[in-house]
Image (cartoon, rainbow, N blue to C red; front, side, top):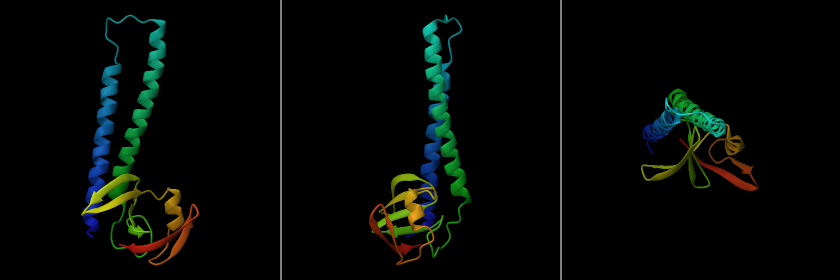
Length: 147
C-alpha cells in the first residue's frame, strides 16, 4: 500500500470539500442579497434571520474544510510504528487513515475511513502498536497493521 497515494487522495477529497463549501457559501451570499428596489416588510426580517443562520452554518463548513486541508499539509505521513496522526492502521480488518475525519473513500482498491485524533475511536487506539488490543464500545479491537 502506497501511503503517498492515500495522502494525495485525502488531500484531493479535502480540497473538493473545501471547493464545495466555498461555492455553497458564495452562492448563498449572492442569492441572499436583496434587490435594490425590493421593499422591506416584517416578514423580510424573519427571512433575514433565517438567512443569517444558514450563512453561519455554511461559513462553519467552510472553516472546517479549510482546517482539514491545512491539517493534512502539516501531518507527517512517514512510516509509523504506533497509532498516531499520519499512520495508516488496520483494525479488525478496517483501514483508517489517521489525521482528519473523512467519509469512506477508496484508494488502490482498499476502503478507508479518515479518522480524526479527536474521535473517541481514535482515543481508544492512540499509541498502540501492531498486535496490541483495546476495547471500544464493548468490542475488542486488535491493531493488525500500522504503516
